[in-house]
Length: 203
Ligand SMILES: [Zn+2]
Image (cartoon, rainbow, N blue to C red; front, side, top):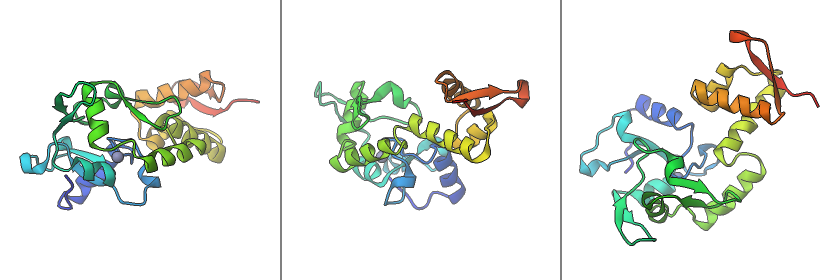
């Protein structure tokens, strides 16, 4: 459930923590016509409060379909199971992308039930994912790569702390992203220790 009563600094923190993406469908807020909102992971009517641990950043569609639900039916087994909880569960454990990155696929009962309940494979959303994929903004991992390469194109280099800030990653995640781009020959590592930075790899 959404609430406009969540204090602004808390909202900002929840949004930043999510990297400006819906924590249910991973859609980027930068490419949404409707504003995103603070979702109470456990609906407020069931006693949830406004602390960051009880909130998730959600697109209007996921938030609207979730409403006061906490459980939904797993289409595979017919069992009633808890919906995905972004505060306690990892997205990648419960969901994955189809090979063309258009559909979200459930890996668990909770994943499948959440996809159905939140209508996360709506035709309009599939079309949007396809377009975002073409311009390098979907899936999220691809979007991070696009942002890093654009940053290096603009500034000549990037340090790990820049990638942390730019992509809203942890230190380890930023290092792993930069290392992958080095392994894929898209960037090259320069300098040592704290002075390490990354440039575009030579053609
Ligand atoms: Zn969503």
